[in-house]
Amino acid sequence: MKNTTLIVLLGAPGSGKGTVAQYITKKYNVCYFSTGNLLRNEVKKKSDMGCKVESILGSGGLVSDDIVNEIVEKNLRGISEEYGAVVLDGYPRTKKQALMLECRYAPVPDCRVQAILLNVAPEEIISRISQRTICDSCGSAYGPSQRKTACACGGALVRRKDDEEVVVRHRLEEYEREIEPLLAYYADKLIEIDGADSLEGVAAQVEAHLRSLGIEERR
Ligand code: AMP
Image (cartoon, rainbow, N blue to C red; front, side, top):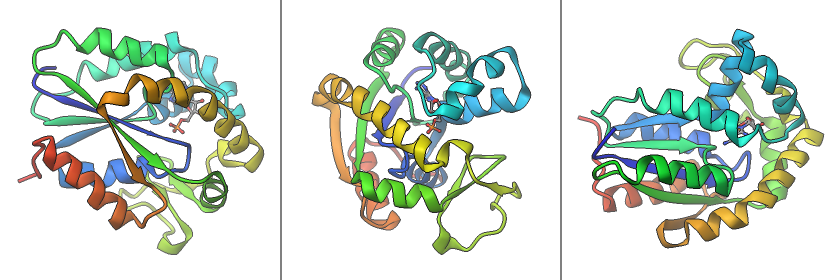
């Protein structure tokens, strides 16, 4: 991969990272990359990795950096160079993962990393997650106002097992523990967005940033 921008989307679970990422993926020449989706696929396939991580995903804990780095390495490498950027949703989640990403891609010609933080208050997170469903095929998330019974891709809408309140609280604790070092790490390449705004409002802020980075809309 060369001549590309890696856009690191930071934010608590339920802050809208996946929704925003999928929105800009449709409109801009960017590729969507979610470690959560990749790990859930491994669980679904019952692969060796899937069996190792299933209970961790179910409890809301973080999968080890080594396993995550393995799955990232395997899947990021194959992304086509035709994309102007790759939106990373849920990776890196720890400073160790950020260092790995930097080591792997910093030497690649014209490959840069930018970070976007979606800020949403914890009470809003719990409320959003308790009402959302996700597509069991593509991972798109839907809120109650969308009144959908199936995903646009045809997949079934289901509740995520780790969206139960007790598990969400654990995921939020993990997030709080890891986010400060990550924000410090990305301080000079970070923009913050009010994630409590409407999808259109959040998307407009993200789009302004993409344009300032020279990332083009799809033709
Ligand atoms: P997500 O879909 O991003 O909310 O991720 C769902 C779950 O997958 C998380 O709660 C973690 O158990 C695991 N996971 C996803 N990405 C990572 C990562 N970068 N590091 C560690 N665990 C991860």
